[in-house]
Image 1 (cartoon, rainbow, N blue to C red):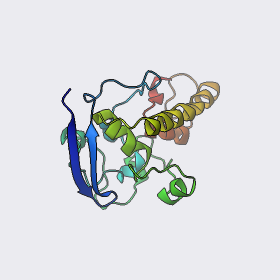
Image 2: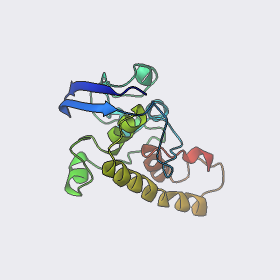
Image 3: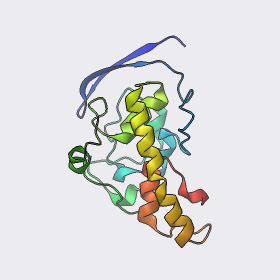
Image 4: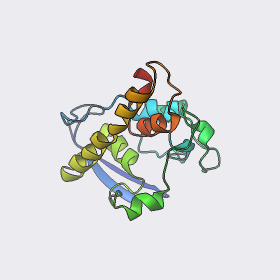
Length: 170
């Protein structure tokens, strides 16, 4: 693949520039197997619709055609697939050191850019490790919910959805 440079500007990142070195949706790390694409997550309803409500131009327009985004750039839990708020404020993410300067919006921004083809070595390893750790919530659902009862433990399910796990399959 010929490398491509993405240059842009948005309210969270300011001016940014990064390189795409893999084809979109391809060449993922062998330990990283998300159930959902960024587009599927946006269409299902994540982060109360506030994440990417500004529809950054760096991503395909198709990602936003059916996306559940906030009309007023404020979080609305009813836009989430499970109808509950399962997010912590960005200030908590920053305080805990979960935010990398390359992706000031957090894990989902990293995932979207990774999906697009950006690769960052150590940062990819860190984010994939975080993604794998959130899987612990699957055990709680399997232990406490009847198979197919997708509205059992909605907050846990919404949190998993924020990390590209599809708990509807459990």
